[in-house]
Amino acid sequence: SSFLSDHLNKLEVIENYVKDLSKLEKKYSFDEEDKLIDKVVVNINAPATTNLNVATSKIGLANDCPISEEYWWTNELREKKEELSDYIKKSSRSINKEAKRVNLRSMEYIGIPYKLTQFQIDDLNEDIYNLENSVINHEFSNAVDKKKVIKELNDLDYEVKNEIEKRLDKLAIILGAIVMAFITLLGFVPNFIRSYIKDFRLLGYSFALFLISLVVVLAGGFIVVLIQRFRLIRKIKKVNSLLIKTSNKVSSYVSNYSEYFKNILKHFKGVSILDGMEVEKEKIIEDSTLLIRHSKAVKTAIERDENIFNLFALKRTFNIYLKAPEFFDLNIEPKNNKAYDLPECKHNETIPMNDTGDCVFAPYPFIKKLILDKDNVFLHAIENNINEKPDQMKEAIND
Image (cartoon, rainbow, N blue to C red; front, top):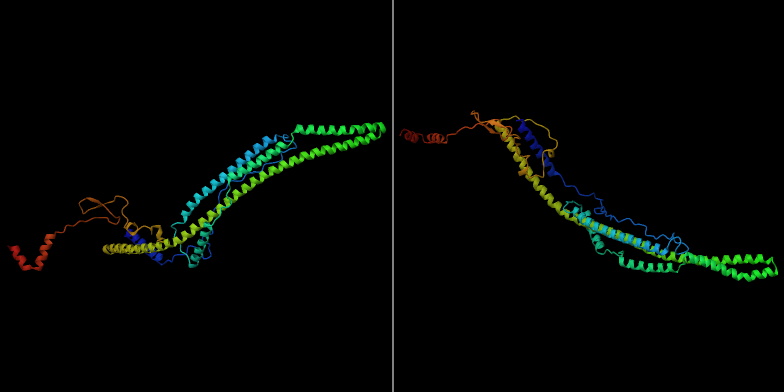
């Protein structure tokens, strides 16, 4: 009886559990003030930008001091071109990867049931309409034309190399300084002779004037060299400006795509939430139907167990089960749900049959013995006929 009592107690807990679920009202999926689709985040993992500036600190007064400027410039520009090309390529791949992730993420919102208030439905329809316009009319004005950038770099490269060729090398600067000093000296030789002949004291003034003139001439040459350096740096800064401008354009392009993908995902989520309302309606109907089937099944199972108690005059005991889900799965259909069936014997337990010494397997633990009794149907029929027609039957028997 303890086995049957335990099972019947569980059935009654299940019955109460099913009744409670039938009374529950489905909660709304979101709070009233929640923004339903504002929490979508898209971050494209753009590559880190490298320093695309060509450093001008190595540019000296001569085109071969401290290093050969033509060799240095060729290597620097090639390196910056490769870095820029690599940055554009990685950015493009990041966008493609994010596009695939967006496609996968859009599937996350499909098939989820939602219950919304009418205000939330109105706001959601408005957001979806705005997002559709945003996605359709989105402009990708920051796209980088790689071929155009390379052409502009090649044009600037030509200007820089042309400027380098105009610059003097170290030997030319030294020889130039010597020549200018010698010419200046030759210009003052007559003055030195006149000063020596007329008044020896004037020779010092002449020599001082010569030094001043020499400094002015050399300073003029130095200024020319500085102007050449400044013009070269200005050309290189144009290259740096183009490199930085292109890099910023690529970054802006990636950010533009992030916003575009974000709007797409928001639109997907909004539409999926509206579709989820239909899923929710279907789920409510399905859950309600399932609860009705469980309610009928548990009542049938309780009646069966109570009939067994009454048939064998068993004494029932009561146990407390707090939570039905511990031993009951609502999602399993009643016809396949083991909670309604009497638990079968876990092991092949045998029970005696009659007093013959034979044994059979017990289907349930509470069955301890099987007694089979023969019933002679023919004799019962004769007895029934004798009772109904006694005179005719006695004549038939005597005959």
